[in-house]
Image (cartoon, rainbow, N blue to C red; front, side, top):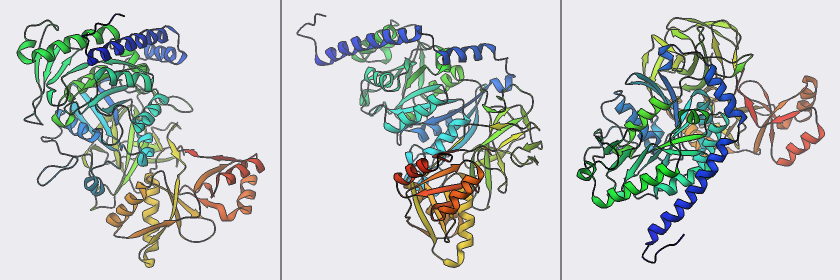
Length: 576
């Protein structure tokens, strides 16, 4: 390629990027021509799926995932604003009279400006019903996020325009890929100084090995950012910096040669927009709904959540291209959403959401059927019938009584400890939903109550948090007290804060001699013999299952070598 001496560095970078994108475009096309067994199976599944009832077909159930501080909770708040669920959007770091966000309702979340627990919200958007779950970004709370991803049909991946793909985004993306979840991408904070758009798209394609189809294109960057060009609808979206809660002005245009563009966009930015959109349309694949549903393509929207910009286009994209409620894997058969009988599973339990009451609410994802208040459902684990007399729909910590719900909805069932994570509810059939994980803790500490007379209160509090999935609680075979295991150090602070606020019980965590835990399975006599020989290392979790506590990796290797009939597992399927 011959390059004139007058070509600027920026133009040279664009030429190099163009060559790179051309190469990637060709490799993507080659990938698509090679038959993929998973995609083929998924295509067959979608072709053979019977038509869903209209109420189920209008459901869109999705989670928002990202690295901390990319803007998940702010985006959630704007979703609620556009859905008409709230009249004024709150702020994550609210000051003075500013309203706080709905999804961060815990005291610690408000003090630190972070999400520490997944929260569900249900609201209408046009003719669609959105069930949205805002997840914690910090890796310390990743187990809650992993479990949440079992209950949704798609994920919205939020990335920071200046930072691109970050470590936690990549981990969560891999979890979505394991579950074949379709992913829609929102590139946030375009009103700040951010990276080149082609560079962001290139990074997503290279790091995540997924095709990227631009659904909108930013005009300007940082201070010069004035809006986006909607590639799907040929509309110009102009951002209003003065009012953060105002819907962006939308101008209908006929292609990039429309003279109306010059009335709204400065000449230099218009020329750059035309050049970049021409490159993007020539080199990047067009949005294909089937590829999105198969998980091989992600559409990307650009915007600024705090300025309410680009959010409505993303919501329209979820409505138009997002998946309807999908079949749920279970034993002994798969559950299809169009089945008339009601089936649901518990993916999260939250205690004390209302501090005035010692309440426990189980978050239930409905997998099939039309649920009505007052129905009798079978609790598969205990084989007892439960009358669901006061089911609730969530708007974070606010709730309203649910008279009915359909497959795809997330409802709350207040209970007194009968429902645990992984439980299945059905209309009589003995089905058990699979794939809800519980991970071995990476940090172990002993816990002591500040007042020794309140050890019973401490036990009750710990068991409640263990059933909620906020921590693992182990009762050693020898000695008194409890050992608490978590995935990340921040969870200890959250636990101490919640026990003090919710139970008026100051506690302290102290280092333990153990560093990791493994669940033991195998023949009953072999397990009992091993437990009797290693009582100093043995404990029971809150479900009563045997757990082997270790100090070194050497201990685990020794057990695996000396007791080949036993299996030490770092994960436990939460299917009881």
